[in-house]
Length: 124
Image (cartoon, rainbow, N blue to C red):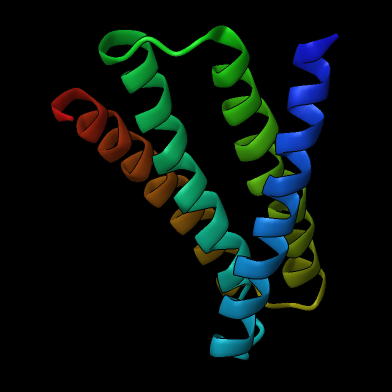
């Protein structure tokens, strides 16, 4: 039961963090392209890579904390559903180039960020 409560609590924090970061980035860029969603997903990919690498091979962290941080906080912080919805809306509005750019950047930068996170986790 405690794991579920930890996931819920950290999920709430992750959702608030996503709302804040996405909003700040979206206001700063003020365009049609979903930069806020891209930023939270890239940051979350990096953080998850580092967290898993650190807690698997470097530091002992109770399973409850790994679950709360990885599934709770980072699961709520990142958003695949918003990424796909925003991409669909771009396609529907005829912004095919922007939609394809969103998919390409999300995949390429997400993989790079996860790899960098794993790399950081290995040297810390």
